[in-house]
Length: 398
Ligand code: PMT
Image (cartoon, rainbow, N blue to C red; front, side):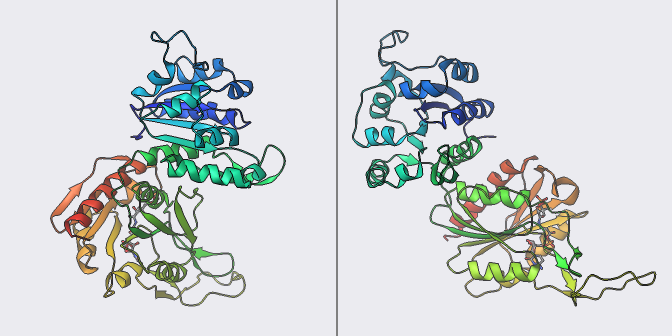
């Protein structure tokens, strides 16, 4: 379930081309279960009309400080009073400057000044405006005042230039806002993890791999980052976007994955092995494409190093969490793997329940026994796993 469900979000829209993305943001917030109220600046209304935002939010749109629709004529107070957050997207350079200086000459700026709820801004501007010393100073000033800044991103801009200043996409803003409301139970922790399949080359075009999609690992990386952790995700080849706040390192084979994990490990508090790592690789990789010859082809395989077991056996081992995907006898195999690798926590799932799909059913195993989590979307399952992990870390005094 989205953390914005049931929350009241005031979306401020100022005058930038990226205002068109705010329309999609309002739609996504509503779909995720938030109650959305839009405040349009005069400039914002030049780009997208109030009618659009009213239709998408299902609520009246506010533009005027003197709007008589508020019974006490205090829209600037009432709108923010029981809100969970104000998100200004797009926030122009001018709006950020006025925010930094406490200006209150229209409804949105007055609302921001009169608030006692979190304020988040998503800057959107030309790269030179973003890099200009006054903007740099203003962004630092609002950060120091406790305002949260989402983005901006680098990329192609409406003016035709390429650089920093592009507003985050609506989906990215929703993801960051969802993360904003997650309790920071892993704050100050560094988590290194693996996800996805490995690919063990037979020749330049063929290899041994498996059906792991990476979805469970990426969902868990996102959940750890949203819970405040610094996350390094060592990932096999998958087609998934990198979650916000996660540093991804690509690794194709088990050997590459091991090297990347060992490089990322210094300073890690937690290591989580979600990847479906091939237990064996071809003893030799042919330099050229193998040609058909005869009825059968015999491959000689050699064992891969067990990354998780190696990390868990280190004298300075971080708190290690394993995963196990089984096609039968989940309890026995999962608990067996946990004990063999001396892990304080392991997440077990049946291949038929979780591999490749969007949902999963998992059981967490630890020294206290087995703890089933309800079947849910992987994002939600990941939140449950993080909760359990945070509880064990706290109980272990780590
Ligand atoms: O990617 P998805 O489609 O979302 O699917 C998710 C998943 C099913 C792959 C995931 O939930 C999962 O269960 N991952 C573990 C897969 C597995 O069966 O691992 P294993 O039993 O081979 O290994 C046990 C543990 O040791 C795992 O944490 C694994 O990452 C680790 N391991 C295994 C072998 C090896 N050489 N190195 C390792 O680190």
